[in-house]
Image (cartoon, rainbow, N blue to C red; front, side):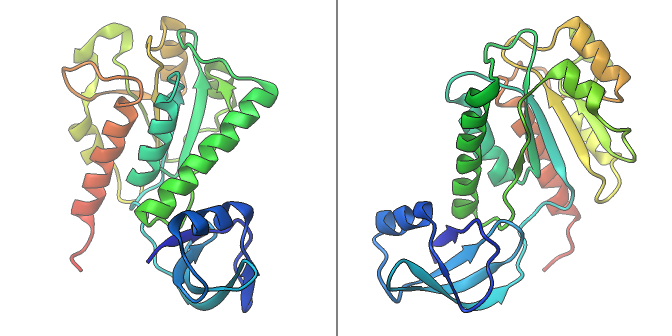
Length: 249
């Protein structure tokens, strides 16, 4: 069944399709009377039927969830070009609850003001499309673009949150815990905040600030991963751990 995202809370007997949903319906060549799954990003989905006049009849609600067993937020030094799009898409598919795009000292991408808002709107669209494709009914949050140092200063106390830094301090891989060992120590359902750098990595001051904010260095192995690959590798490892901890169906 094809899936449609509608931004307004879904309730009542029928709703109007958004402009984006109308374009999606036409691209899929759906017709009046065809059934789709509709979701608003807040959880669960509706079995629905297309009506004349770009409307949707809501038939019955299914509270199904396809989220990870823990909330994982990725705070990433934004990679340039289309790589950030790719990162947001795959992070959505793998179950990230939120993505925080950061400007770092060695990063190439600089976004402020209206340009930052346009890119955020674009990345939200990427996340929605990924949810439509992968079956998630909760759209991950895209945080406001921020400078890394300011973002670290604004972080609240960890309050039980596990924080990991995907960069060994000062390039010393021996100082970082292997990701499998670090993940195995997490409590069931414990939220995770993962910080990773841009193409050029984090500089000394940024690493020091992250360590002071409670981030623990974690190693993803002996290979050097790209800026868009490292946070996804961690997310995949956490997703696999969540699947192995889940009770059998």
